Image (cartoon, rainbow, N blue to C red; front, side, top):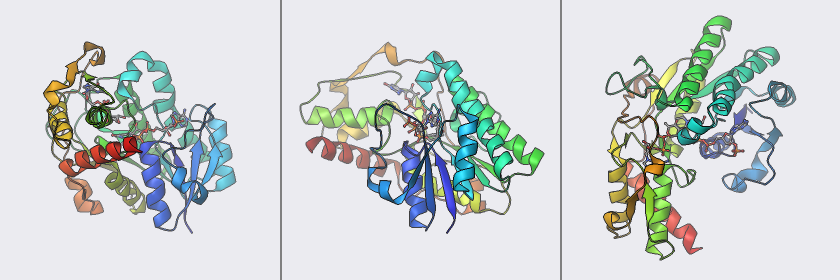
Amino acid sequence: MPKALITGITGQDGSYLAEFLLARGYDVVGMLRRSSTVNFERIDHIQNDITLAPGDLIDGASMVQVLREHEPDEVYNLAAQSFVQTSFGQAVLTGETTALGVTRLLDAIRMVNPDIRFYQASSSEMFGKVHEVPQKEDTPFHPRSPYGVAKVYGHWITVNYRESYDMHASSGILFNHESPRRGLEFVTRKITDAAARIKLGMQNEVRLGNLDAQRDWGFAGDYVEAMWMMLQQEVPDDYVICMGETHSVREFCQLAFGALDLDWEKYVVIDPAFYRPAEVDLLIGDRTKANEKLGWEPKTSFEELVRMMVEADLKALQG
Ligand code: NAP
Ligand code: F7E
């Protein structure tokens, strides 16, 4: 039975990837950082099927310990300080975790077993102030936030360890992917949760920032398959994973509120508190390489994604 270690097991992608690997017969180990409260909402339903191991990206020795004890064949590094807005206020913490954390984990792998296959969760935020549209694997990076800068570091250190030490290290440059398990601070879930609350009379308005921002949004459940596919290749490489279409925050509001027969314009209030010091205006990816080399294709449309999220929020709130 192959064994996989997932860092960031309590996050959105960690939970979908764990489900995906369990269904393929993997023994799944999730690395968990210490917290004063239990935050297992996303993995409650699979808790008995996985093993949890204490470790933190800030602490290299803890990861050496996890690798020695559990001896995984594959490591998926999904842990990060992943919220762009927070990275402006906590730039150093974001660098420690999202950037240097990758080096600590790669070094731990090198020390314990350099044959372990490694996946790094890179991001379309690395393209930032885009140099071309659509963005592909060789599009130059121009990050627009401390988070984006940290991800560029994580990406290049992964490439560097692959080239320097012949490690099977791959990097997935994933565009935004969402789901009913998305954190409530991200704009998609903030909107679907608010629309459901407004429908149920629990809330009167939702305050948002830049409605003109455009993103290439897909379904997280589809994207984790691409992570696994990358580690099954003989040769490690980097791949853009995206839908290849872009939609504005305004359009997301229209669809989400529309799914509940609500007019979004009556409830959305612009609040400059949600503007960012620098913005990524137009992200749209080109997934040709992933399609040709991995055979990966998304299964869920943008419209299906929005509806799925709205319905899940409505159902959860109705209890
Ligand atoms: P998420 O929901 O924010 O989950 C992040 C995970 O990282 C959580 O499990 C969190 O643990 C863990 N974590 C944070 N700091 C840690 C530390 N110091 N040590 C160990 N674990 C730590 O993120 P996601 O949406 O699932 O994204 C997964 C990865 O893909 C991230 O690296 C993200 O930057 C990247 N990415 C995401 C997207 C997207 O659209 N979702 C796109 C491109 C790339 P706690 O639960 O304890 O906080
Ligand atoms: O913002 C705009 C905001 O926070 C999307 C992370 O998973 O994807 C995610 O990063 C857009 C931005 O995601 C609000 O200005 C307007 O332009 O949902 P978001 P993100 O910044 O794209 C990438 C690929 C990652 O790698 C990250 O880890 O929406 N926006 N009004 C707002 N955003 C938020 N959060 N809240 C608002 O009220």
